[in-house]
Length: 489
Image 1 (cartoon, rainbow, N blue to C red):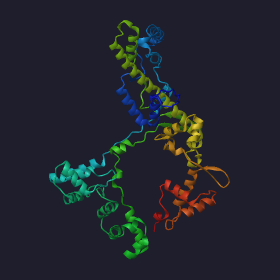
Image 2 (cartoon, rainbow, N blue to C red):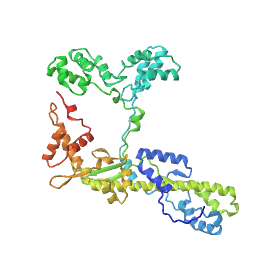
Image 3 (cartoon, one colour):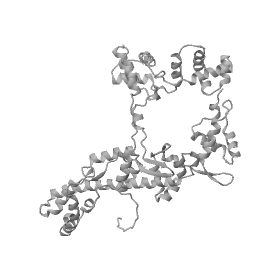
Image 4 (cartoon, rainbow, N blue to C red):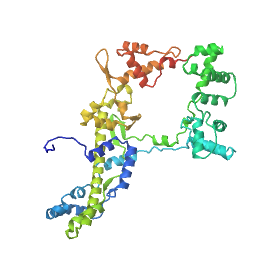
């Protein structure tokens, strides 16, 4: 049986404005610039610039009172329309202070150079070869499948299938192999290789033949697995050479480039990964100055023509038809959207500013000296409590953001680290432990590298009681391989 009942329920939901702010907080500066450009294109009620129309200030001073009177006279027509928010909006947003902008203008711009891409360079070399039309099309398709590091990681059968279905070319793997060999003869040496072994062999074969290159080719062809795992004893026994000779051969192999395409930085991917700092921190004579990198973010304001359109509707009660009311509803939606976006940008800048100021307070010594050992243990909670924000807000601010200092550009996450206690009870940053580990690994005897157990013993002697598995975790975070792979002869 159906019945009605009354129930009181409390729910927490994010408003559209809050969702917009959260998304803006996560964006780094370069993506925020694109977001602002997109919003300017989509919303005609939002415009950039600081100059207000002549006489606008006088209108602003008179309009709020008239609008209130009009709303009192016609509640049905204007119950949901309010102009005050737009008429009292400052022409100059407070997040773009003139003083900071003048200071930012004095900073020298760092030019970005977009060089020729690897694929373009290979296509130029292909144009110098007198190949039949069929082989030329195969070569162009192969070059299009070469990765940025210079490798061809697609199977030749898959390439043949693509050419059959897309270009209508009846070819097989046997037709592609000789064309690939032509490409592998291009510069840089090693390009077009399908794996590391082939890449190194291509480079060796381009060098002047001698005893070292001969043995290096034999090692790569016959003992590649042993070489990568640094089982030098097996190589010595198999080639029947001295240890000194093997050392020279290994040195010859290590001079080869495992990623021949990395020297090209003009690809689209690399252009998109250019780092643009969100904050600029200057330290001079013990004083630290923080500024926001807002050079690519224009001043924003509400379009005064839309405000005038709204004002005209409110002042002309006789002409308030249904059609005009529908039009003014559209205007109000655009005005609301523009105002929300401006407020969200302001709040984003304020949140980022306060968060960065807090990080500077907690890591002041580092910003003055650039010494990594002066970094104090700091987690998201520490910054959140001091800045007055939620932990999730600090997490969004620190994600994909960078700060430019006198000592280089650092990601914001660089300043966050866990703490640990020494045997004397002193709290230190885990970054200090990693630094000590790296120093010992760099200074170790490469013929007998330090194991994780030995590193743990060394740290224990210095007062850092750490388990072996923790040492292994820190070593992996430093990007260092295990002892066996660090071994040299």
